[in-house]
Length: 214
Image (cartoon, rainbow, N blue to C red):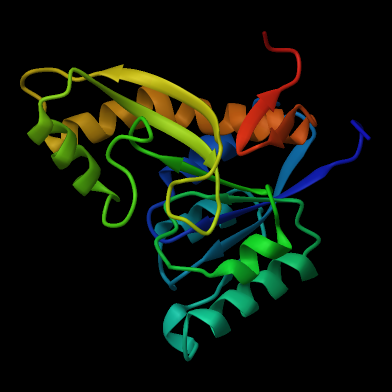
């Protein structure tokens, strides 16, 4: 079981900085039995596609505007992932809404990274800089990032890993965003992927248990 390669698809909508973190980890041999075999972009022309091409990773564009609704788009996405034999789906700045068709076909096999310590600053409307703006408005001293398993309810799936990051008094949303990416997101996302690919994650009663951890 442990020797079987885990095929990973990374879903993107923009520049692909988290995709790059995963590619870098893979090239350092840090994704365990996992290999990124497909990148799916929700719109053409995004820089994440260039990152995939630069590293010889197959990529495809499934543009939301080419489909009548969320259901048609979700079916096309799930069909694409299944046809590619994907074992693990990673949302890396994927901003297109998908429905339960994808979750049902990949139960407990979709990971997302969120730029805050869930359950703070998460849910509908909390994405990109909005997350960091809200954190700074609240005056929190600590923020961070969370990797969680994706379920139909936004940002409510079982938490895999979290890492805290200090908030500084002179932070702007942009500086806080950058620090959280560098100190948390780019570290815990590859680590969570490795744990999954090495078969160390189990989910019971909406909680993640990691084999070998106390």
